[in-house]
Image 1: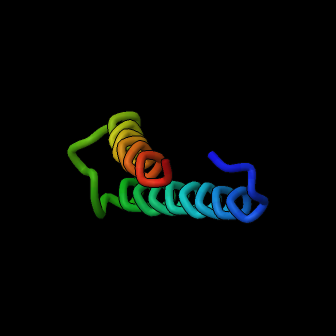
Image 2: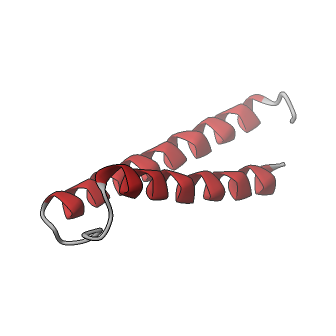
Length: 67
């Protein structure tokens, strides 16, 4: 990766945006699970694992697109 300051800003922005998206999905999934609106067949740990696994896979695709 290039050491250009603009590229570092872009990578930082993408990382912050990605982490915000993960946080948002974790919060909304937890609210759905808590109020029995969704994820009713999953335990808390399974639901969190599935959400994090989903976003880890998306993160690999994002990293591949950046490279």
